[in-house]
Length: 201
Image (cartoon, rainbow, N blue to C red; front, side):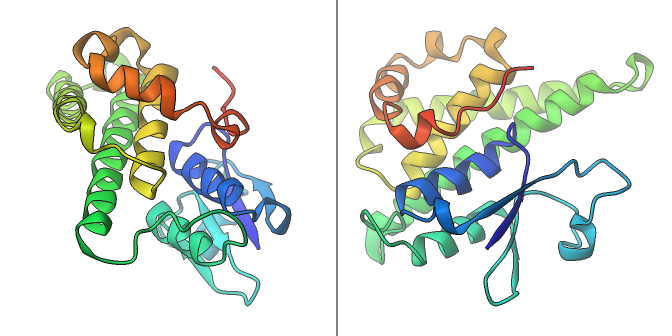
C-alpha cells in the first residue's frame, strides 16, 4: 500500500494511528506530499486533490480519512477492530469521529483564512469556524463519559484535540473542558499517538 501524506494533517494522523494500532505500518509506503505544489500527482489519483490518499495493494485508490481508516482497520493483523461492527457502539464511534473531523475541518479553514492577505480575510468566516470548534468541544465535554475504550471515535477525538494544541493553543480549550482534558491526558498515553506526533511550525 502507498499513502500520500503530510505529517501535519490530522486526517493523515488518524490513518497512521490506525495503521500502528492494527499492525500495518510495515506494509505501507509513505509518500510525503505537498498538495499545493503544481508537481503533485495526488489530483491524478484523487480528484479532490486532498490527503490522505491511499493506493491499495490491488491498485484501488481510496480517499477521505474515514474510508481509509476503515479500510486499514479491515486489514488489521493485531489488536482489536477499531470500528465497532453494529449497534449503538458503532453509531457512537462514528458520531465521535464525525464531530472530531468537524473540529479539524473548522480549525484548518480558520487557519487558511488567516494565511490570506489581510484585505481579503473575512472576520465573519473566521468567527463561524471558531464558533463551530467551540461548540464541538463543548459537546465532547458534555459527553466525556461516552469516550470509552479504543475506537475510531476516541482516536479521532484524540487527534482533533492534539490538532487544537498544535494550531490553536491560544483558544485554551482545556479551560472550557476539564473533563475532556482529563480524558485526553490519559487516553493519549499510547505508543501510536506518540509515534505520529507532527512537527510544530
